[in-house]
Image (tube, rainbow, N blue to C red):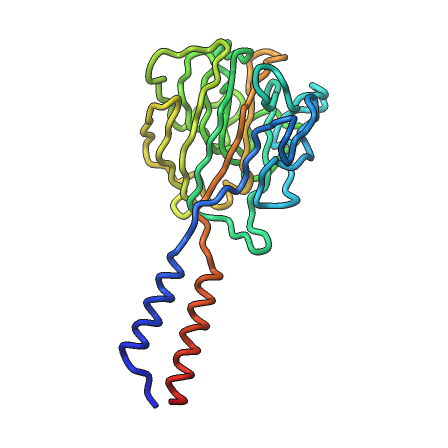
Length: 277
């Protein structure tokens, strides 16, 4: 017996809706706390090799993404008490964690990165350093001096200027830099930065620094390959420059293939029952 046209259209429509259905979910979240929650680490814990406090990717630990650790020594990436629990990252060091697809988790194409940071002790004398950074690494590279493999946004510690970076050399130039919108306050202030990327086109959107929106020129640098690791970093013009990060979070629009499978199987069941009728 032939399948009724209306039934077939209904099944295909349901499957199509399921394939487009997606949920926003946290991929990585670390508030670098030292008490009271899962993932808590004592003050002074070296973060390299530890798992973010809340992560959808078990086993994907923080690791040094770039920086000359052998020259500067430990501790350089550690939890810190202070006035708020934070990650303390010293001069020219990056921290990243893999966000590659694993098991049932599928790396989303649409992602949102966010952080809160303090650059009171970070300098940019001579304009050669980028301050605090939030973004992605295409690969990790320990014991290198430069912003190796980094794509993302950086905030100048002295002016608040916001720069888009794409694998620049330490003394290189940005893709684009925008002046801070407002009056920049450096000392003893936590600033917030967030933005969205889409790896299908490598695009950047919804950039917000301290509550103000910024519009960058079109870009295609945030590809799947260039966003293999999510991370943060500090770059200072003087040794001992310490950046503090209150939290680092990456969320994404994650598809739900299970819903698609359930509807598809249900649709086949309807077809089978109709054929037997």
